[in-house]
Image (cartoon, rainbow, N blue to C red; front, side):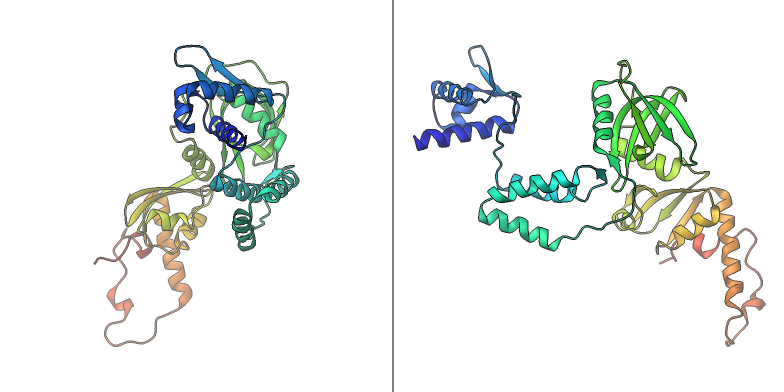
Amino acid sequence: MLETSARLLRLLSLLQQRRDWTGPQLAERLGVTVRTVRRDVDRLRELGYPVHATIGNVGGYRLGAGAAMPPLLLDDEEAVAVAVGLRTAANAAVAGIEETSVRVLAKLEQILPPRLRYRVSTLDAAIVAQHRPGAVVSAEALTTIAAACRDHQRLRMDYRGHDGAESTRTVEPHKLVHAGRRWYLVAYDLGRADWRTFRVDRLRPRTPAGPRFGPREPPADDIGGYASWAVGVGRYRHRARFTMYAPAALVAERVSAETGVIEAVDERSCTLWVGSNSLDGLALHVTLLGFDFTVHEPAELAERFRTLHARIGHALGPPPAMDGPSPAALGPPPAGGPSPAASGPPAG
């Protein structure tokens, strides 16, 4: 009896791991005959598990959705992953799920074996969530938008732009993008006849959803990268391109996905795209990242670097006395020559 019960639990675990199994596959994994698999499936059905079967020489089985959620069987790594995910969700930027996440985590920790409870409690004791003021979205809005994306249904919504202007939009939603502190919707805006990126905390979906639509060719293969460009570069008046003389991973530690787009060139350099409505803001932002760089575009940004270089040099006053000709005796720099900040790393 104990052997049969253990095998039923093992069978249930297998059915939860993937969508479809054939009878011989299950028999091989369980070390029994196909006939025993059929009997065990019948026992699971008697216990209320909706196991669907397909008829044929081989036969197949699938665990379906029932009226109530069946118990989940998790291995050690899955249980730890769920616990860490729930702890993270309790501090996420989604309103209404914090309490639910904590409640589910409490249930999970009660049934974890001691070795796993120790691993989870160790992680919990060592991890501190960084609470930052930011936009919070409702779980209801996220699920409404996600369903419209999945079902290819038009979405009517009230939207507040970054300038505070209110508008009503009709869009064909494509994907939701989570950028850490904020959620974005990438959608085709029918009124603008173009792809747009919307902050989810600024929109209010109208229900019911609109008619279905045929999916369009997406604006990019990498929707996350597309959203980063739209948010960190594309929406600004000035868009600048730099070569940063540092590994892409190192630059990414100081430039978030919401403030720039990074493309690796080789192991020691990368391309950085950033945007701003101020050329001075661009110049200072990239300079303060702490890496050598070359500015490529726009042309007026290089001129702004020269102006700032001269202004800072004037603010520092004359250099201390030194042997040999003074800098003034050497004459001004060549006309149009690049400033040190815009010329890249020193040779050698």
